[in-house]
Image (cartoon, rainbow, N blue to C red; front, top):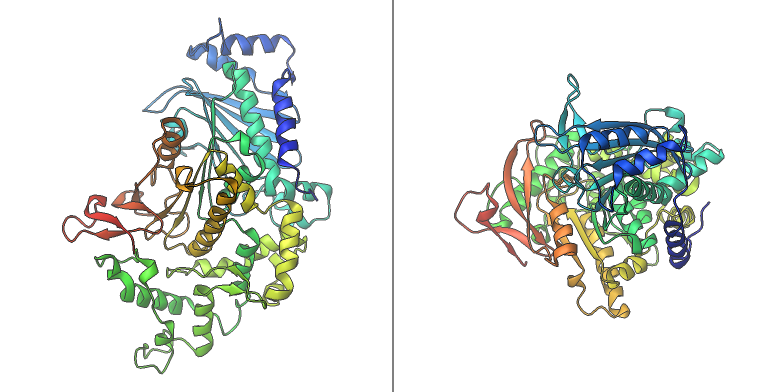
Amino acid sequence: MKAMKSSNIINDLETARLARHWTVRLMRGAALIGSLLMAGCGGGSFSTNPTRLAASCASLNGTTIDDVTITSTRWYDASAGYPAFCQVSATRSPYLDMEIDLPANWSGRLWQQGGGGLDGKITSAITTDAATGAIASMNIALKDGLSVYAASNGGNRSSVPSQAAPLVWADGTKEGVASAEDYAYKALETTRKLAKELAKIFYGKFPERTYFNGCSNGGRNAYMAADRWPDEYDGIVSGCMGMDVTGQTVGWMNLGSRNGTTAMPSATQWQAVTAAAIAACDALDGVTDGMIANQSACHFDVGSLQCGQPTADSDPAKCLTAEQVQTVKAVTSDIKLADDTTVYSGYNWTDWYPHVVYFGVLGGGNAVLATGDPSWFSELAKQQSFNLNHDYPIFQYGMRTIGAAPDKSRVAAYIASGRKLISWHDGSDNLTSFNDHVRNYSTMIGMTAGLGLTDPSNHTRFFVVPGGSHTDGEKLTDVNWFDAITNWVENNRAPEQLVYNKRDKSTGSVLRTLPVCRHPQYPRYNGTGDVNSAASFSCTTP
């Protein structure tokens, strides 16, 4: 297992390595190096001639850079509003796959994208039409920002059962351990280094600005980037995941352990809970629009849904037993150890179903990472045996040992160094707790005072995507985190309020726009105007 290294040692080694001559072993001979560099630079400036760049792109195929092998390249000509770029696919033992996209007209930026869930596949910069192969969509960082785009599969392959997380982490092999370490943090470093080296080869210079963006496990990735390699990133965006992976694990297991028992509400009962909570709290933001935007004012009592209560549904399929009421309360309440220490903060009111069905396997997957015991993921009986006070310290030790747990004090140091961090969360997240993210973020902010930072808001801000469930607002077309962080870093324009394009999940069309306010503010309807327009709302302090 990989122990936590000193940040100074890591940074010194990285600086030394970047300063020395890049050692590139070309499978097609040394003459190829010349063609790469000629295509990439001439007379001290980078040539954007498409023909030469396409040749340079093709020449990269088969290259080995350190321990990474480039397995394929493809040149995309500019078309239909999309810029020309070179897409590079690469791999590193045992199971790490990466994508690096190099735009013809480069802005000098590197945009590294985090993963999600247990990873297993690359979050590509593009989607393509299944019939024609033409580009159907492109990440804004590449399309409009003309950034080098970098992403990986997190060190495991979901399409290959023997190489897929989380069970690969418990297969007893050195490859399994290496895959776990890649997921924890190593994949992030390898991907960043490869992207920078390819930029040097392709353009003749390293990136001028480097950014990291991620949501869910990608949000954990983002905090790991601030923790382990603070000098490498000018700006970081971290969404929909708190800074405590152990807390998240027990948050999932606390509910997942009730799967298969009479304490777990049915789908119909969960949906009844959601409907009742919305009915009670929807109008707290000044308009009845089917969502709860003013969550801090929502004090819905789920006990009112217990069978036999005058306020409960008379249908036994919709009202809750006393045991099920306690289950719902367990979701919305803080989780505390026997000594009263809070290890996870309760969820906001939201539509938990069907997400609650997966809490056991998600928590179990994290538990496999921490313990190496596959039964946490594969056996319901093991998940049902979860014991908070017994298992929490075991999970905590394992996460720290494998290197998957961000250190809040080091994230605070990243901010105090003058770099920029945007944190955000969906206000109605149904997979990771909004309140736990806020709690850990607030703890981290408190640490910056001891580092001499008098006004943390000059370097970090926390935003809320109103009514969003898990990962809503993740896409840069839904909330433009790219412009927010690059303008802050490069133009010193701190983000005050953003816009959320809420979309139809089946068609992708924009249903309405809403303000994305700085926490603790929420968007309150002005009383007049189109309720589907962000202009009709004002960010308001509770």
